[in-house]
Image (cartoon, rainbow, N blue to C red; front, side, top):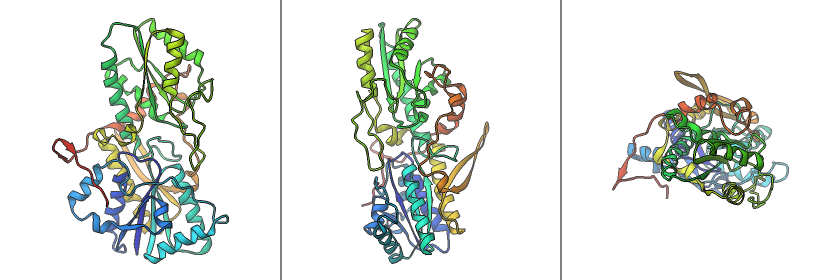
Amino acid sequence: MNIVVAQSGGPTSVINASLLGVFRQALAEREVDIVYGSLNGIEGIIYDRLVSLNDNLVTDEDMALLRQTPSSALRSCRYKLPSADKDPAVYESIRRTLENHDIGAFFYIGGNDSMDTVHKLSAYFAEVGCPIRVMGVPKTIDNDLMEMDHTPGYGSAAKFVATTMTEIIRDCTVYDLDSVLIVEIMGRDTGWLTASAALPRLLGETAPHLVYLPEVEFSVEGFLADVMRVQQTTRTVIVAVSEGVEIDAAGEFQSGKVDNFGHKYLSGVGKCLENIVSTRLGCKVRSVELNILQRCAAHVASATDVAEAEAVGMAAVRAAMAGETGKVAAIQRVSTDPYRVDYTCIPVEQVANRVKYVPREWISAAGNDVTDDALAYIRPLVQGEPTVLTENGLPRHFVIE
């Protein structure tokens, strides 16, 4: 048989490591001939835009470059697959493309919404008696997929956030004046990534002094009281806040627009809080939005994350070759100290359209910080620095034309 792999949703620093894992394991399977890549996710299968990865990934250097390249080499999409009863033509188009290319298994690398596609497509194939296997490969910097310890992409994003926070701490404490620095961090529904901003505590830092996650109700008055309390002991107050935090005056910073899956476009909570602090407290204040750097900063990737991303892609292929379908490959932690993980597969319906939140016990009682248990959970995921191939002092990237 041939197989096809696609990438969907927001990119990460290690999503191509998972792509490489699928490719490398497929080469090791005697029943697999050609490994196709679908351009722009499921849309590439609907419209028959497939490329041969065998023709693109020829040398060891090609594979090494793909492993270190951020974002989605096959490009991405945010296409919501309709239900089969509402639009059967779409499913027939997908089936026709796969059968025309002798595809026996489809691997979809993505997050919550991508797993919804895996669920719908595998259920459809089972209903019509089509033997094509469908497997999910997890990725998301949000770390919000259920039934798994963590997701590929999160460790590197967390490492970038924590590294940037240590540099911000050095920069904004050089002046002898009262100031507030607010760092806005990605996280639509959950605060896993914002929690990583507190990792500088492992180096003996006291900042960030305040950390706000969307799992806990946010109060502007409570926030201002927190800032003023910290100001009693330090002149520079550093705050980490998730973009998904809902401010009392809802709508001040949210556009109201939604994507194809009904998710709000979030941006601006940091600027909103900056304006509130400026107006109410009158001290110097600045907000920083890390934005898409959180998901594409491969120059500060976690070697652990890279290795696990590749391994989980390989696990998905092994499972499919063993006859599994409608499953998601997953990382399960065996122990934290020493850190060890295992790879398994879980039914996709346990993952699709569900959200894993930061445990309430890992958030301070006041809702303005994270606990040592949260840091202990994150710490192993940011370890190690991968070897990077460079040219003229810059990291090289792999591009599929």
